[in-house]
Image (cartoon, rainbow, N blue to C red; front, top):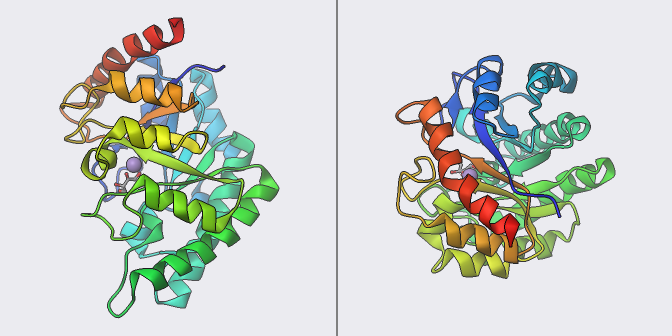
Length: 276
Ligand code: LER
Ligand code: MN
């Protein structure tokens, strides 16, 4: 079985989200490769601002892959949301996600639905919003299935959204959508807030995890807070997950230090688990 791999989330410098490296891809690639990461998760506003071959030309000289595209900037900057009561914003969200799928296909990447699920609006019940979410995801996933691309739904903590905070809630949405393309993206920062025991929730998601975000309890690099990644990675292995561990973290004190610490924390654990 393939081994765990490391990536870090890189966003354009103008991104209004702090838990990413805000630096042009061209500058990120040599640094990330120097610390022996395997890939870069790309956070983008407009998927049409890039072509797959342009991305490949930047990353492949360094042997880097793209595990996934992060889409949340479309909610933060433009309000595109799968659950917006405004039909136009909902339709734009679906369109954008389909365009991300098209960009992801030739790169073998997945597409993340995190903040683009939105949050309930005034006068809208959680049930109404969830049914819009399921409806939107069905359309996006049908498009993704036809292209062999996976879509990753991420449970996000209660302070950022009131829709789908826990692994259990996300699994329910997966069941309602019923698409083989739809998998979970779990993020240790959100799990540390929402899940009673991170390891148990990972095991409960066995076979349904498609992507994984690593951040420590304070959203700094793994090793800068108090999450014990030994237990997290052991649970992932038990749950049959061996894909990317993608660092979605606040870049402090520097990107180099984030890369160095993430690697120094996770690599020995990965090596120990692979040897068992
Ligand atoms: C995105 O992956 C994430 O984890 C959320 O906090 C959205 O910002
Ligand atoms: Mn995340």
